Amino acid sequence: MKTMLKLLKRYWYFAILAAGFMIAEVYVDLYQPRMMEKIVNNGILGLDNNGVSDISLVVSVGIRMLIVVIAGGLCGILSGVFANVTGQNYGNDVRKTCFKRIMNFSFEQTDDFSTGSLITRITNDVSQVQQLVMQMIRGFVRCLMFFIGGTTALLSLDLSFGAIVACAFPLILIDVIFVVWKTNPLFTVLQESLDKLNGIIQENVAGVRVVKAFVQEKSESKKFDDANRHLVNTQFNVQMMMSFLRPVMNIVLNIAVVGIIYVGSVQVQQGSIAPGTVMAAVTYISQILNGMMMLAMIFQTLSRGLTSARRLGEVIDTEPDIKRLENASGKEGSYAKTGKEGKDAKTGKEGSYAKTGKEGKDTKTGGKNEDAYKAAGKAKGTVSFKDVSFVYADNGKEVLHDINLDIAGGETLAIIGSTGSGKSTLVNLIPRFYDVAQGSVKVDGVDVREYEPDELRDKVTMCLQKSELFSTTIIDNIAIGRPDATQEEISAAARAAQAEDFILEQPDGYDTAVAERGMSLSGGQRQRIAIARALLKRSEILIFDDSTSALDLKTEARLYEALNAGYSDVTKIIIAQRIASVKNADRIVVLDAGTIAAVGTHDALLKTSPVYRDIYDSQLKQEGEQS
Ligand SMILES: Nc1ncnc2c1ncn2[C@@H]1O[C@H](COP(=O)(O)OP(=O)(O)OP(=O)(O)O)[C@@H](O)[C@H]1O
Ligand SMILES: [Mg+2]
Image (cartoon, rainbow, N blue to C red; front, side):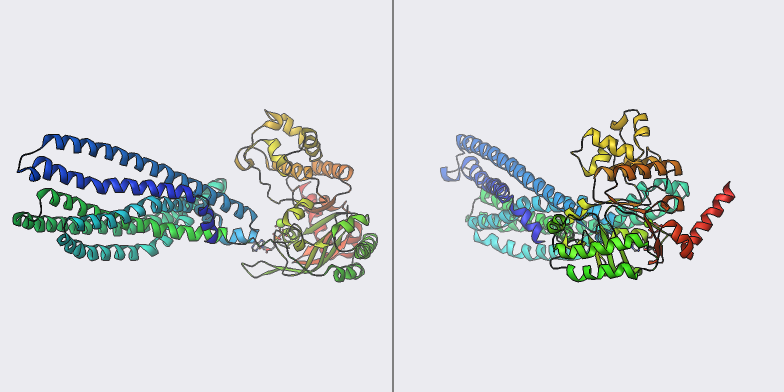
């Protein structure tokens, strides 16, 4: 909420202008009955001229009235313009701030809010808050002015009219309070039903192919209907309450008008006031009570807007999980242990482990920060997992357990394991998409939690398991991580990713537009664009999470060749399901139910690791069956 108010403060001067012009407009509205009174009493009835009417006075006051009304109208327009400027700008700022915040959310936080709810918040809730701001500047000022100004003017006509206001006021107040009290809780429900509806729409529109493929249109439509009905019912209840408000107010208003006329006519008979004054009093009482009726509407906008503001505040004030940690676990201690870890590993390839061990020691002498690390001339791109375990907050299941692994700079490390064994989870810890539950993950000797998130993600690039493309051109899709890249660099990345051939075959080559989420390309083509995107970033560490699953073995082999030739200094972590994809890696990690079952080269693992042997045999068998 605090941030929401801070954003509003930026436009205070527009708000003041809008309110100022509103006050002027209402002032004119309140001034009119006075002129009317003069026209009737002095002009038509000629009360101060022995009953001789004065047409010239009628004309002159009439012209004055017209000018005042036009001026009032202009003030009204200006008030509207400034209120709009405030509301639109504020809404724009809130939307932008919200979007930026969402972009900085960890995966876990996005899961927590749910996509549907985030969409509702950034669209509908922002509109509600915009409405609220505009209503408050204009409507609220208007009501208040009508109420205070109208009552003062009415009482200045004749104090006896005050009794009627005093009677009508509590009746209307009770009515307003009742409706506000009844509708208020409904607004939270209303926004939540919108969340749900948006969630369903989003999932079904995005997944329309799956829905159709599994002939789920009926059941999905039913889900939608249920959510929609809930929304409609809630809206209906709100409207019911509101429709109750208006007639009650109208009755009170009309009784009050009758009251004024009655009190007025008695006094006219007694000769204490003039008929024109009674007319003015009738207008004032209508203005006062209409102002109060508007107040009820404003309360509706207020409670709805505040509900939305609270929901937006929840997003804006949520601190991103992924924040740089000061004084994270001491580097010295962990490094001392890195060397030992190498020896502890059961099936490691001697060579690489020896290498990792040595690096650990050097880093230690290299000092704390990365500059010192660079100064020591060390290979970059090392990753080390130390006693890592990981739990997904939403289901509390321990997905990774006691992971110890050191990856050397420039190494090609493959990870293989059955589906659900935790491969994606493991690599997600490196760019800090999630945080470890225990232990630590280090990149270039520094705990990932100690990096600024941007700095870390410059070092680590991940090619996700599901390649997401955006609805823009192929070239923009590739250059997303490096918008400044030259065409030559982009081509080189595409060539290495084995993507250039098919890109050039597209109607507009690199400038061919990609349909939403890449649907105009084949699965393998999408994957290769995603790989080119990752390669172009030229990070120290490249992670491919099952990114070659849709490539045929020949294309995949050519990709690996290109990686070895052009990206030899880059650390490559490759998750794959096929033995053929991993067997040429420097080392292969076999992951089994969240623990490292074995580490080694293909040949070594075939001899030492029963799990790897199993995978190998099963794939060999399949191939045999197929051929
Ligand atoms: N966001 C999440 N929230 C809760 N549990 C999750 C989440 N993502 C994955 N899991 C669970 O964690 C376990 C490991 O998942 P992970 O995605 O790491 O497996 P994987 O080895 O990459 O599998 P695959 O080969 O199918 O990609 C699975 O049991 C899965 O159900
Ligand atoms: Mg996975």
